[in-house]
Amino acid sequence: MVLQWYFFPGPTVPAKQNRIVGGGLASPNTWKWQASLRVQSGTCYNHVCGGVLIRKQWVLTTAQCVDHLVVSMVVLGDYDLITSENSREQYYAVSAIYIHPNWNRNLADGNDIALIRLSSDVILNSYVQLGTLPTSSQTLSGSVCYTTGWGVTQTGGLYSAILKEASLAVLDYGTCSSSTHWGSVVKPNMICAGGGTNAACTGDSGGPLNCQVGNTYVVHGLVSFVSAAGCNTINKPTVFTRVSNYLPWIQSVSTYELFNCKHNNTCSATIMAIILLLLW
Image 1 (tube, one colour):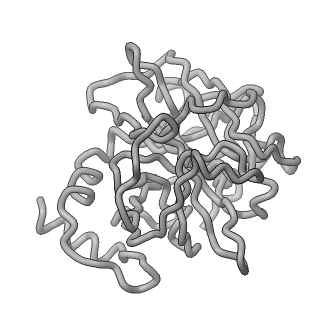
Image 2: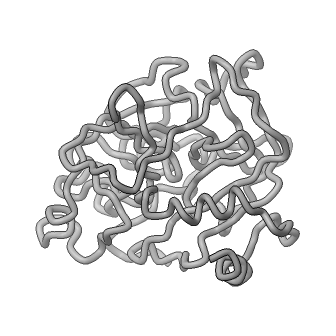
Image 3: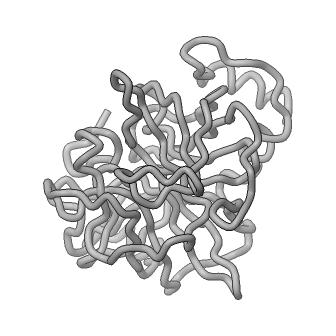
């Protein structure tokens, strides 16, 4: 379900309309953990969402990207969606999908997070590396971070084939949840960033919010939703799933895989809830 005052920047329009608003083109080989989630259409595999490589066989994304679409391929090392670059791109079939047990398609409830297990281990090289996850103690208020992806360049606008990046200032929870911003829509398990000319938009969902911690960029968030009034609406910053809130779940699923998903390669929330109760 999508509430009337916001929408998720996920696969609601054709892939050829999917890019970031504002910002600029990313430099090649900068965001080496950026993944492109693909769905098959005839003989083509079209980009629908972003993701983050966190282990050699695991990609982190948002639940909205995988709970109603058959994501069958993940591409790593991609930079230009149109031009094939076999020397840098790696293609992997999806082996299983794990959606957070508390996800219910109401974005205001949060829990917009999922894990994808790939068919085999990714080869780490100069084009593909693992993303770094945060610690639960890291704070972000006032930090400048980068959102990356292949989303629309303006609300309802055209696309760029090249991976884009946009710098976003992180807002504290008190400001973002105030009546002048998102109000009660935003929860503590979310991060707000932006609220000006730069924003994530349709097609960027599941992609990372990369924040510099020391000399390392850490993936603190996953693109979840923006305002229905426009992706870069003033005082309506892009809202991200707060990754640090889900570290125990990520660890439990990616470390202790206890069963195979056979129904459309997707694990149901009910089964996942039972498994996690056993683990904890």
